[in-house]
Length: 90
Image (cartoon, rainbow, N blue to C red; front, side, top):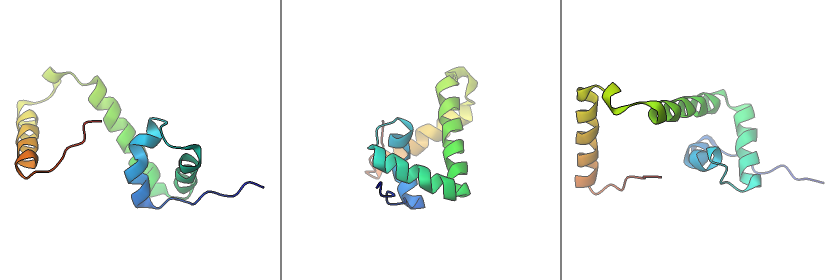
């Protein structure tokens, strides 16, 4: 008899999303997220938005980004570094 894995909470879905999409979660954790997605339209929307954002970021060319947006990103990253916040690069 297979036991149903612990159904993930929304905050767990956000925390584990990158590993899930890259296929790096153990099968039981991935299944728990999938069960949650079956029950939570908000998380499905979040996942779809995240996937779209990643796709756009991977296909966007530097010259397509407005100068103002580039500067705002640089300012944000400098502020985060100055405040000692660690930025994920994976």
